[in-house]
Amino acid sequence: MRHVYLIGGRASGKTTLGRLLAARLGCGFTDTDELVVESVGMPIAEYVAAEGWDAFRDRETEALERAGAMPPLVVACGGGIVLRPRNRGMLRSGLCVYLHAPAEVLAARLAADPKEAQRPSLTGKGLLEEVSEVLAAREKLYRECASAVLNADSDPDTLLDLALAAARSGS
Image 1: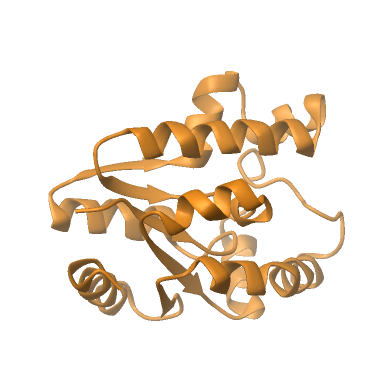
Image 2: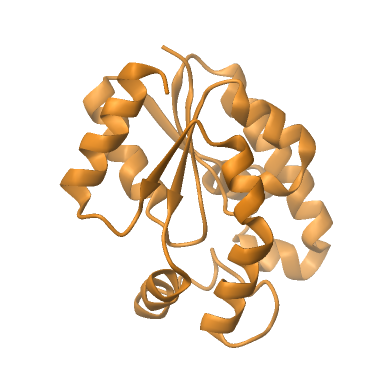
């Protein structure tokens, strides 16, 4: 088994699906955002406010490297992990699953469960405008890395079945 990397926008369900998928595959699970919080000792929003986005992206790359050095597992990746070419190379070394959802779906999920300490604003704009803008900027990068693209707006059982099929087929 290779690593399974889950990528996509904020609130696309990477962590939720990742935990379920790891349990079904009988392997470990980690989340790059959780690894960053563990290494910096503070919530992401607080770290970004103190050190800036570039420093956060450095910590995110380190977290991806740490995850990649572990035995094969499922890794939920932060939404912006695809911004760095080095990270995209690491993502392509395993099975990379892009959880795609329309901006309206992601914005509604973020509004319902904002987790501001974990999900700081990226642009300072309104939620739907920000999500739309960020997705438009990252869509090509997500697809460039993806071994499989799944509809993140699917019900959890369907999404898990699709992810399992992708993991088992290696595509």
